[in-house]
Every structure is written in C-alpha cells, then in structure tokens.
Length: 127
Image (cartoon, rainbow, N blue to C red; front, side):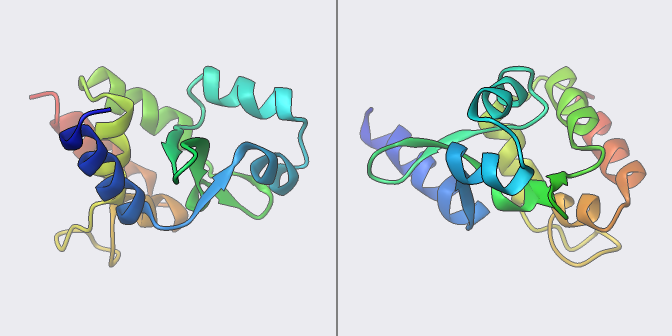
C-alpha cells in the first residue's frame, strides 16, 4: 500500500470511528461467520480493512438492535449506481453534512429511520 492510499484508509477509519470485525459482527447479529461474510459479499454491508493488521471490519453504526440497519442495503445499491466505490460510499455515508435535517452524517439519518432524504441525496450524486 502506498503512502497516499494508507492516508486515505486511516482517514476513513477515523471518520467512521467504531468498527466491528467479522467475529464481533457475527456475535452482534447472532449469525455465523459464514453468514456475515455472505452479507458483506452480497453488499448488504460495506466493509473496510482497518487497524494495523488490516482486518475486515464493518462500521458499528450499521448494526441497530441486533440487526443490520434497515434500508442500508438499498442505500448501498443507490450509491453504487451513482458510481461510488465502497470506500467512497463509506466516506459519503459518514461525512457530516450541516444541510441534513438530522444532525450528523447521512448514516445518522438512516439510524433515525429517514431513508428517503438519504436516498434522494445519493441519487443526486449520479448527476
């Protein structure tokens, strides 16, 4: 990994804050490791390699009440359709936006159950 990529990775890691590695995510969701890896492979969850050992991890905010955040998979699809990579989508989801009706980042809107505004803004990225 070159220095520029490492800096971007560290910035994303700090932007998201709390991450769950695959075993911790499996425990939080009550699923097997295989099932969690399948959620990541199916892009129902976005993952990133974090920490010194570059372990696969998912933002902790993607889990609410022992389940994957409702409407996350659809939002990930909209962001992918807008041409964002997984890293860009994670950055967009976790970057604070003062214009949102809920304080914080688009992910906080999803946590609050307000997917329509998030998806509308995600769709606008394609234009």
